[in-house]
Image (cartoon, rainbow, N blue to C red; front, top):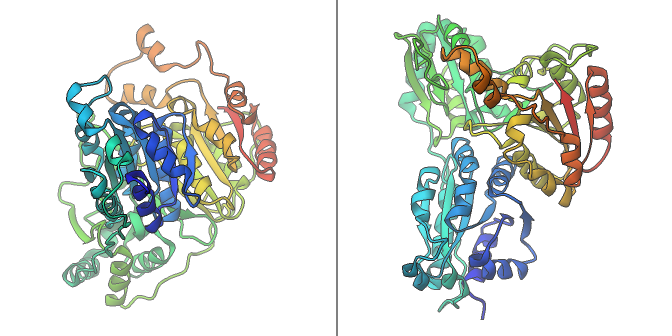
Length: 516
């Protein structure tokens, strides 16, 4: 008879969870064997747990449904937590399956025994220890339902080894009880309409989540055109559709001084699936909120609400028809010479083919990207959302697994790439169609800027050695080839454009080390 592990797999499959990113251990061997019997489940191995959860994040952002992950006890979960944090901030649906010792073995305090619930809870909206084989289907269905409860979230199931290897009394997979987003609140719609009529020119519509989808933006930009308001995206967003044919949305700036200046004359902010903007960090003598003290903040729709319907109702209340995107400025001509942030943005924007996916963890080197790629070919932009570096390469893995017919570009800073460079191996093993644009400035450039921003002075010998990555310099082309990914190094914008064209024309992974 099939066992509890089989029942967990079949409950996942019944609910259309058919990809598992995995890094298993001994406690999960019965689950591994069950996965082996389920040919409808695609299993993708990651050599580090942060790759596993980051890939699950990228997959869900592109499909709108969760993948499963398979992690080994508390330490394996601990390795996965940083990208679970990023997924939590992105409202990503994810179902983590964490194996544990058999329930009767826990009192013996074997070396891998740990507080898995305590580790999981800060990064999970739902944590459930499976009570036994008869609890497997119900617990799994609950985790799937919670993962997909609007706006989406990370869930963690703890699977004791004996619950996996024991036969359930009744073998019946359970269908998850899924819920729709909450309908728009008529009073909030009316209040937002009144606020826009009263002071539209001093208003920002701040959007995130589904409010950033093209149809919703048609309504948002029409509302702005009719009232004098401005539309902005939250500083970090899970997914944006950008390029020709899409509205040229700008985001809240990252740098606190620029952000404060940007909102200086704003008198009201209307939130649509977004949070009120705050500084990324605290800085001595600078505000935590970047809004003026007298700025009113109202909510049209919370992240769990139907933000698209709320914008449509607001537009209808104001008597405004949705507006298609205007033609953007064409991409600038390709510069020549040494690679700079500006020439990087232009080269990447010109290279993107139609329907590409761009996974962006460029950090400091990519700050010019947004402003200079509105005229690029239509593409999807996936961004680091939670600030825990090391997600760009795993995001690209997940996006490529989700969309094998679309070219994926990973715009990746070198310092953060070292957190999850194992993702290159998974790209090679799965022959994923990913172009990695590895930005090699050989330092933690963002930290050099932050050292000055917090008033900590000029780096001396010890500080500099904690911020530089050039002694020894990392040879990314050799590292990639060692993991099965071909690559090349470029030092000029012309060479970068040539290699981008070459890599785009090929199938499979390719890494370009960009000396910037």
